[in-house]
Length: 383
Image (cartoon, rainbow, N blue to C red; front, side, top):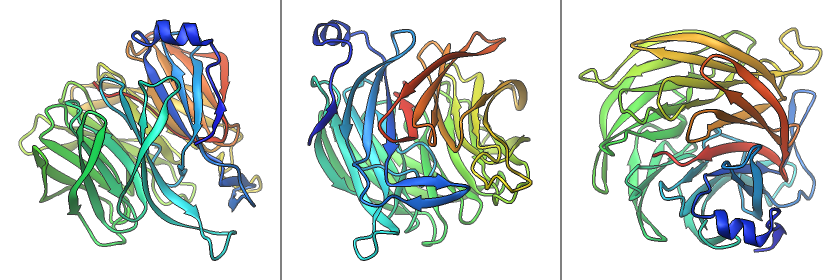
């Protein structure tokens, strides 16, 4: 594994701050670009990368960058960090087709990164199902779930120290059901799996390493994709990305206190809510909308920027609070541990945009953190 960029703040600063640093990770895809609304495979692309960021500085600073296979295909939740920030898991949904380098094909890899070493390094690569996308780690740091988009399954892994071990698969649909992301409740006993292929959200039960499909599905909207569960365990939010035809799409609120859990509110947000993330206190929903920025410029649905839109969770309702322009073909969002800093990954600009949020006003700080590749996913640890 070859390092592209090492410690930018100096070794002494990283060592001194390691115990305090809150880490964010951006997974950066170099295999594809967007040319006037059309995704094209790059000829002989450079390696994909992962960038680690220190959120305890303002603006956040790059700690290090390493080569790791990633993919923009799937919701921007293809990286997960253990609660102690010791390990990161990064899935690779697509790879270049060796038989035709102008095309991509499903990958079957997940990289395990040791974040405690200086610099961080990949310590293992584990097999997943076909087309791994969203990955989540429970708040106990003992279990991980990976949604396999191309085969209708969820892969299960146990985590012990630095060992990530396959523990089976759960079938939640056929190969066209499109499992996109699996979000785990704080008590570690349930997971919600979005299936954008058949417009359902599957409910899984978890008992230790035993994960089962309960056969109960929730219905939120067209093509449920990204999903996140509040740290309070009271609710979840899901982004319904729709058909991409220019119509305004939706997000939905799921009441996890209800027996059984159910969708209780759905609101219209705009074109293609690609990313969705709850603040650490569960009160604010950050939605990253493509807003037509990924469409051809001659399209009547084209807009020259995406949008970061914030909603407030009030009981069983969602209320819009603020919005701000972002880049093009934008993907994921991540909150700092105090909920005041929001990071947004822009694919076309190959950077991360930094916002400040005080509960009333959303401010673009003007900081743009360059990364080596299009920021396809971004995440902090769920605690």
